[in-house]
Length: 173
Image (tube, rainbow, N blue to C red; front, side, top):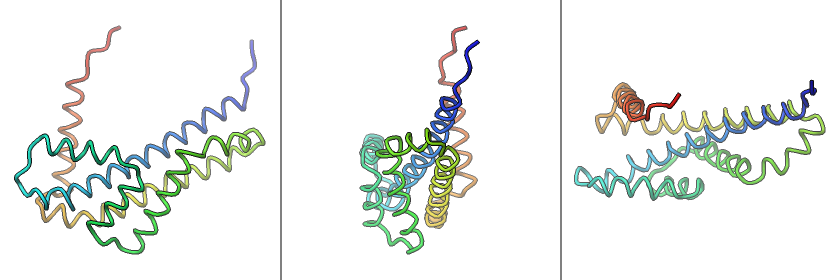
């Protein structure tokens, strides 16, 4: 029986943590697009927007870079200094993960730096989560002003998840 290479297992685990960190970066990115929807799209369109405009808004914003989204957010609202620091750090770490992470960390991994890498990835996950939580705190008064309570948002999310489950094709066994 072949022996399992511990470095290969560590690499797989690093990839899992990396995936979790990038997932949280994308959650934050989606939060910024949602913020732009409430801070920019709705005030400009009021209740007079079409499904096409709605789709184009989200499609256009999801095609932007993280940094461009951050700049768009700064144009439509004043962000508190503490949030500005979080979003700046999040942008820097997201860009590092997207463009540099594997190139710089594979030598570290193979030199025995697994714990160091995982610690930094967990720090990134926490940073993205903290930034998203701060963004939610900024947006919550706007949601409430527009009739969106946390309960209503959660109910809409559940309806969406149920719709996804219903539309999921049956798996072939």
